[in-house]
Every structure is written in C-alpha cells, then in structure tokens.
Amino acid sequence: MAEREVDRSVSQTVKAQLALRDQILSGALRPGERISELQAVETTGASRTPVRMALVRLEEEGLLEAIPSGGFMVKAFSERDISDSIELRGTLEGLAARFAAERGVSARELEPLKECLAAIDELLRQVPISIEAFSSYVTLNARFHALLTELSRSPPLIRQIDRASALPFASPSGFVMAQSALPEAQQILIIGQEHHRVVIDAIENREGARAEAIMREHARLAVRNLRLALRNRTHLDLLPALALIKTATD
Amino acid sequence: MAEREVDRSVSQTVKAQLALRDQILSGALRPGERISELQAVETTGASRTPVRMALVRLEEEGLLEAIPSGGFMVKAFSERDISDSIELRGTLEGLAARFAAERGVSARELEPLKECLAAIDELLRQVPISIEAFSSYVTLNARFHALLTELSRSPPLIRQIDRASALPFASPSGFVMAQSALPEAQQILIIGQEHHRVVIDAIENREGARAEAIMREHARLAVRNLRLALRNRTHLDLLPALALIKTATD
DNA sequence: TGAATACGTTATGTATACAATAGCGCAGGA
DNA sequence: TCCTGCGCTATTGTATACATAACGTATTCA
Image (cartoon, each protein chain N blue to C red):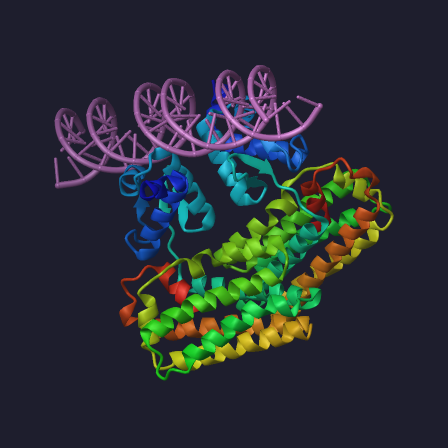
C-alpha cells in the first residue's frame, strides 16, 4: 500500500517538472528543440494542466524559452553565456560570504561547512582522483556552496543564488567523467578547496571584504576550468550546454 | 471592431498576470493575504486555467508564496529583506557596469544613457523638486538603469537583474509622493545623479573596477534612502512592502 | 463546559473537452 | 516550373467539469 502512495505523495505538477527537467538536462531534449505538450503528457504521465504549469516554471527557471507563436523550446546557451553565469553566481556568492562575515556566524553554524571541507580533503588525497571520488566531490562541493549561501541569513539573496544555480547545479551528467579525465583537474580541485578554506577563515574572522573577494576568485577559477574543458571538448560535443555549466561551476 | 480586438490581442494569461500584479502592488491585496483563485477569476475576467498560470508566474517572480496546503499568498518582506534586495541588485548592476567597461561600448551606445542623464539634470534644477518632476525622475532613473544593464551584453546577467528588479521597479505607488516630501530627498537625488555620471565616465574610459564600485556605492545610497524613508514612515504604514522597495531603489 | 469527532462546505488539484490559430501541404494557374 | 491561394491538420490557449483534500462548524460525549 505504501508503495503506491509514493506516486501520489508528489503532485503531478512537481512530477512533471522533475521529469521534464531531467529530459532537458540529460540531453534527451536538445537545445533549440521545441517541446510538445502532447509528447510531454505521454512521457511524464501527467495531464496537460500540470504539464503546462511545469513548463511555465521551467521557463521562469531559465531552462525553456517561450516561442512567440506559442509553446516552448529548450533554451540554447553560448560559451559566453555559460561563463557569465558562473561569474554571476560567484558574485552573488561573494555577497553571501560578505553578509555572513559581517553579520557574524557562530562556531556551531560553521561546523557543517568544516565537515564538508574535511570530507573533500579526504577525497583529494587520492592521486589521481577516481571517477567515483570525483562524483562524490561534486555532491560535497554543491553542499558546501549551499551551506555557505545559507550563512548569509538573507532570504532574498538565497533565493536569487538558487535561481542563478538552477543551471550550474541541476544536472547529473556524463560530463563529470569527461572532466575528471583531464590531467589538470586535480590541480584545479586543490586550488578550489583552498578557496573554500580561506572563505571559512575570513568568515570566522569577520573579514567581509576578504570573504567576498575569495568567492569571486573562486568563480574565476571555475571559468578557467570551463575554458580548459572546452579545449578538450572531444567528449562533450553530444552533451547539452546545460551539462557544461554544471561541471564548470563545481 | 478594432476596439473589441484590443481585449483579444493580449492572452488571457498575460491579462490575468498584469491584473493580479496590479492588485498586489497597489495594495489591494495585502502582504500575507491568501489569494483565492475564484476571486481572482472574478476580478480578472479570465478563467481558472490562465489565472493559475499567472499565479505560478507571479510566484516565480517572487511576489507570491506557495502555501503548503495549497494555493498562494502575497509574500511579506521585512525591512532587512528589502535592503538586502537593494544591495543585491546593486551588486548585479556593478557586475553589469564592469562587463560594459571591460568589453567596450561605442559612443553611439552611450548616447541614450547621456540623454537620460541630461533629462534628469534638467529635472533636478528645480528646488525644491515638484511631485510631478519626481515622478518623471523615477521613470527616467528606471530607464537609465535598464540601459546600463543592457550595455553588459550579457543575456544571463540582464535576465537576472530583471528578476532582481521585479520588486524594485514594478510598482507605481503613492510612496513617490511621500518620499519627495522629505527634505533630504533632493540631496539624495543629486548624489545619485553624480553616481550616474561617474559610471558613464568609468565605462567610457574602460575602468571596470571603478564602474563596478560606483554602482555598489549607488545601491548603498539607496539603502540609506530607504532607512531615511522608514524613519518618516507616517505616510507609509498603509502601503504594501513592495511599494517601499520600489522607491527606495530609485 | 470543553474538547473531540464527524459531517458538510469550499477551494484547490487534475483531467478533458472545446476553440482558435499557425504552419504546412497540395493544387491550380500563370 | 514557380508562385500563390486555399484548406486541412496539428498544437496550443481557454474553459469547465470532476475529484479530492482541508477547514470550519456543529453536535455529542466525557
């Protein structure tokens, strides 16, 4: 009995939204491709009304684009769009870090951040890092960034960062593997981890400007990371642009 | 014949969205108040489906909040939320100004900005400034900021700033009058105009850091402006929080 | 008298039927 | 052979009907 209720515990709208997002981010729907409501109804199992609500939400989320004559298409992103998105998110995270530093954070609140840090340290001890470890890193890194954002205690900022991260953090993708194969990956991860360490230190010492600066630097590292990945794009040609954003921000 | 077609030229969804937004921002629906679909159907003239789509859009826009048990309510904002939103927008505009400066902008592209600047100068020559002039100022200022954002040539950033500005710039409100009555208003406007002048200069001379810094300072001015207005809140008690955000950002 | 439960009403979530429009194809004429 | 116009089809936009869940009220029992 409990098994069947799993389906009903989530609204049809949410179910449709998740299913469609997966289809987009997995590349089943390619950038530029028009999304047919009827087809979405078939693949998601929901009826047209919740599917339409999901489409509207995904449009607001930035994954879809409204077609003037009606309907939606999967949005396409240029390389510049992607790197700008990374820098954008870094700027917002910088503000969040500054807020955290200026407004003060208790040792107890920093605890989960430090645990994340330690866990990532553990992973990075592997040389070279395995694909599984890299995958764990991606999850832990996302968690670190989310926790850091929360420290700002600013609902509008948290909300905005969530929206700016919709693309960067949404997708599970094969890109992770492609990137972990790069020889430079390990170096970049180590530098990124150093940034994590510094931002915690800055927040602890209530150095707002330093906390902000390091997060922006962190984003610039991610942009370098993206460029690097794009130079080795042999693995990537078939992946949707969104998958690119994801990993480049990690 | 043409008269009736005006109604049909806009989709029911858009019509409902605009109507509901007006109701929220005008204060007809108070923060925290639940929005009844049925009531919205009556006041907007659209049927339930487009009304629901409009509600979803307004939620994504940040004006509404989903109620766990179903339905939507008008979102309420604290003073801190509002000042954070202003600083947030200033940070994004700073990034936009930096992009504009670093990426280069032609003299022709700066022309509309300078026209705005001159028009505002003209208005500020009045001492004290009239309510009508202040109202024109609000419009011109919004135009200036929109043009500046465009100069970044970064669609993701422009989009994000639009979202961050949904609250600041959306509302026509009686708050304009309340603020223009403050004796300090004129000084603040003059300082703000100086910021506008500096950012154009910085962009022209491709000084990215300076362009960014001045826009962030501009936001801090707006926050001071907000605090000032809140100290004289006699006129404001009956206005929805959103109306506050609007003017404080101008 | 107060609290708890049951029932009824109301509002939201979902599905589907209907309408309108845009795009496409075919056919006919120049 | 190409261009134009008409008509059809497919898909989206809108409306409404149905189902379900939540909230309020009233009644009953402790």
